[in-house]
Amino acid sequence: MLTLTSALARTARLYGDCNAVLDARCRVTWSEFADRVARAGAILLSLRIGKGDRYGLICRNSFHQAELIHAGYWIGAIAVPVNYRLAPPEIAYVLGNAECELLIVEDVFSEVMSSDELLPWSDKVLLLTDTRIDSRWPQYETLLQEARPAEMHDSAEAEDALLLYTGGTTGRAKGVRLSHLNIVANALQLGFELRPRSDDVYLHVAPMFHSADLLATPYAMAGAAQVYLPQFSGHAVLEAIQRYGVTVSMMTPTMLIMAMQDADIDRYDLSSLRQLIYGSSPMAVEWIRKMLDRFVDVEIIQAYGLTETAPILTLLPAAEHRQAIATGDHDLLKSAGRPVPGVDLRIVDERGKEVAAGAAGEIIVRGPNVTKGYLKRPEATEAAFHEGWFHTGDIGRTNGRGYLYLLDRKKDLVITGGEMVFSSEVEAVLYQNPKVHECAVIGVPDETFGEALLAAVVPAHGHTPTEEELIAHCRGKIGGYKIPRRFVFLDALPKSAMDKILKTELRKTYGGKD
Image (cartoon, rainbow, N blue to C red; front, side, top):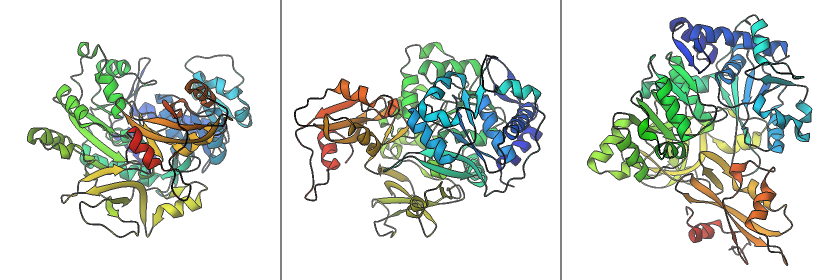
């Protein structure tokens, strides 16, 4: 069976004595990890979470969160990792939309539970803490010590395993339903290309509420040890690589750039590194060259995918990165690679007809790793699928050898530091300010974050809002990464004859992608 429960059972059976977790406080073998997962499953059952139920997690990266996500797989429940950078109203929307019956909260985020929006969950909290503290909520480690292992649920491949919320071009975040088959299929697809090893050490840098963290799955299935980075910084990444002998990690370009720019990088022993995978946002060719120069003996691999594809669709392998540098083929470095085995990919025009190689169009895909759809969003699911093909909303082209080149995204979607932000949501918050008459938010190139948000604002008559005022207005209403980094104040926004704001013209003026 291609399920995450059978995958964990297999790993524990074949690699039981190998390290599953490397942590400053402890070492956990795969057999011990499976036992802890089974006992965590018993805790969920005792808190009335059973087959088909959903529960939220507001936690930083940790092996405890990994246990609690796997505990859901173990008993047939569905984990909903929540982006802890969201504002309370946004968190409440996710929990309500997912109908979470329990909320697992790391102690450093416990204050968020005092917000009015989260009152409905105030009596449904399991606290995740390293030390026993006075609290009205039950504490995970205390319950784990007392729990007896739950029986493994015999999940079907098509059952939902994980619910991840992603941004879109319009409206609120959508809950992407990922089945056991989706995740395991992509792990096998990646395993064929990446060749994970039992002696690998995988560093979790991407937040666990992101689909990018699923890249760890093939390595876990191969018996590799896992290291969890609670909080990203370039220094923390370098420290973890040296301390634990990390061999593999996946990071956004922003993360890699920040690590390479660390003033002390030359003081660290990074010789254990075997593979570095990057993706989630564009990376300039000059930075790819710098990365290849810095990590001469490391396999540098680019990955492209979506939450809806669990997550990877294409890879540009290490050999082709080196080949591009050796031959001066910088165009190849701009490619997202070719589809992983089992993924069919086409480029189609607005009528859904496949276009010739070299022509631009929408990227559509199908494969066992593609989601079945969005939770409670039948109209969005129907719009995304046509005749079995998933429409990504990304614009690209292929060359004669099947390499994919990403040309654009849905215009209103901005990816900043690997985080997806839809501009309509930011605009809605800005419009709540009485000093704002009209506004439009676009993405513009940023050397560190790939893209940054720029807000073009037409002040209301008689008002002169400042950048500082509007930033303060946004705080607490949306996540900090969604707040525009730049504001421009205009007399009028460019519009079409139908009075539609022309963001294309704003991009031309301020350097955004047309």
